[in-house]
Length: 69
Image (tube, rainbow, N blue to C red):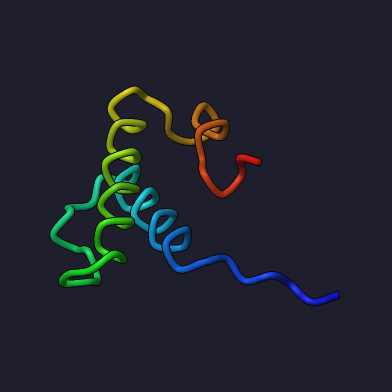
């Protein structure tokens, strides 16, 4: 069975979320401009919020966008 590729915005959001939850700087965004940057920064903001709320590790599984359905 072939796997379905996710769209780029979703992939950028997920990577930004992981960077934000890990406490990395938003200056590490791999894109300089465009919709990919917007999606990455949106994920980064959500990841930072999750980290500030203490939703890291096992306690944050429910808010991880890769595992949510």
